[in-house]
Image (cartoon, rainbow, N blue to C red; front, side, top):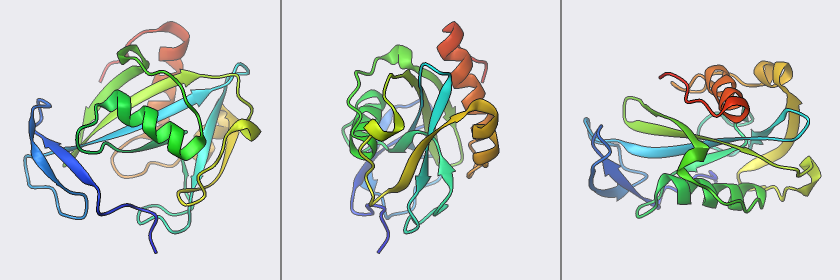
Length: 176
């Protein structure tokens, strides 16, 4: 059985992020409407990034290495509450989230990705992996992380990882 929760409700938005209504995740998104997705990269003090390996029963990209945490924004959530929930669910990582942690918002064909970056002192063994969604987590140096991450869908993980690192180091907003 897939790990994806197709019975969840999403809010749907227009490209200007004005809420238009909601729908079941299992239903196709109407052209001109978008649902929100959040992703985060977590870095440790050794300048390594935590990556997760997706569970084999995921509908999309099973077994692939992925961002530290991420997922769909549920109906009624903001991008900040959604990434906070995703990190808690997938990693057992409870961390405050502010709008400043969001370094980019990128529209695609029928979804909009919001990207976050955080720093932690946690070791990989400190995380509680949600085995229904993930196989494992591991820290990688940036060059090794770039090798592990493959472009999934329309999000260029190499660009996003570099932008997350730059934002964390310099607090600057990358160009879209």
